[in-house]
Image (cartoon, rainbow, N blue to C red; front, top):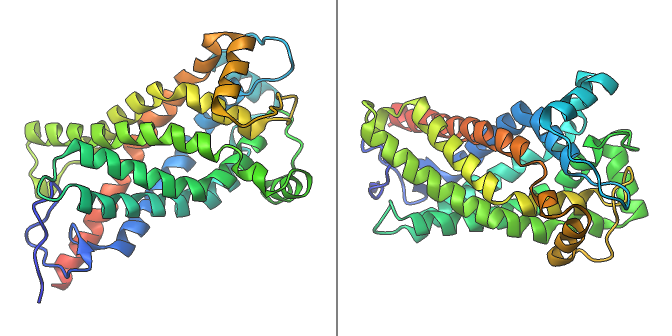
Length: 315
């Protein structure tokens, strides 16, 4: 016998579902929605991500002069043309879909468990986000390493396949996961802030929006996503800088580290470039995550609405 879903903010009361569903959808549909959202997000914002990587990657033993977004963009366009902004996009294309499928599915599963009795609980949303990022980072980290190495100026790799092969042969599979711990420690607080902020912002915007719960407007998801993405990105930039150092070490003159310890790399960056070195790339990082989160959440919610409508039409 069909049962009704608990009173979630996104619950559509006209949809009857089986016990295997949540929020009116089967979990495989969350995977599809998340995969679409992640792919659209990363493909659309990839040039900005390239700028961030170029600004964060350090080379040589002496301090480097910080460069701005405009200078980095001008340099890439002058020396490499527009194609330079898209080097490594194939790696992200291979990793973003599966990683975000895992990301949103784990989030929805955990949210169902951690917010029982209180669907507006921000702590439950934050914990669910942390669980989601631990699982998805295991999927995306190897392709993120490949992507960032291909994004470097004068990258020695011919493409995704060549980069993966050379890393495995020359450095071993561990090199693909050297930044996993840093990535998780960065993305855990990022995701906790992101999901909690998104759910709170979405709920607040819905209260002042003329649309109903059953007809949420695109602007609500986009605005809430942008606010969540920009805040979370700004707070976690130092750890993102460490992640970039670990993933690009030894390539194109970038420093190589004897330890993958976060504290060790932080210390090296501060010693070489001061505390400002930890915030290098924060502007393109925010410029990436604000619209990326807006695109991701609006695409994800639109995909969920599409599947919910299918359920309604078939019921």
